[in-house]
Length: 79
Image (cartoon, rainbow, N blue to C red; front, side):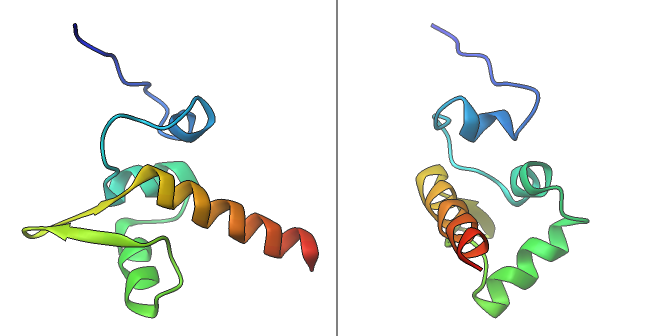
């Protein structure tokens, strides 16, 4: 049985967690940041969601991205 992915990557977390790991390009779309380089900068500075390498490719666990986003939102709301 084939599954269809939503066209809007931001809908991935709103409609539940996707059944695949997220790419840096997915995060660019979800968070509306300027480029993939922003995601890599966040990783180097250790301020972005936790990711991991699969060979030369960077991937993100959707649950970890959702937890990171919730933490950032809570920090913003508390300020």
